[in-house]
Length: 183
Image (tube, rainbow, N blue to C red; front, top):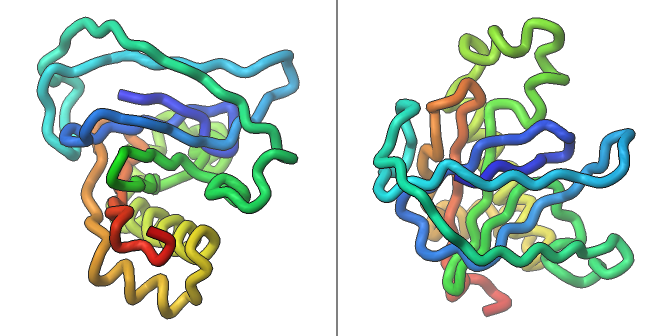
């Protein structure tokens, strides 16, 4: 499990059971009205399929080697990070874009968000968010028109349910690097 901030200090749950060894995770850092930002990694699973359904998988301990790099805004022009406002995973061969029912459900659903998220989330909302983010990624990083991006998505992007274990459901889209125009 990877917990990261998505345009807010509130975290989202990223879970992909079959993802090969993760190489890079990019996300926008939003620093709240306090000094610094927080990063939390944990809840490793020895085995788990995509679309985590329940709170239990085959739990295990994990020792990892993590390197955190802060890319400042003035370093981003002409990179894949320039217009990034959502979590992006990168392996040697793929990019993975994540969508959620709500990018920041605590803000969007208000005072009763913690209870309402369970009745307000849907795969439809998460899929729409993943679709829009993948389209944005292809248009901004590959210079594709909207029609070209949607055509490429139709033949080359695999969408899957990331997780429904917590209330804010997730969908991910995976595209192989070798099908991209810049490859």
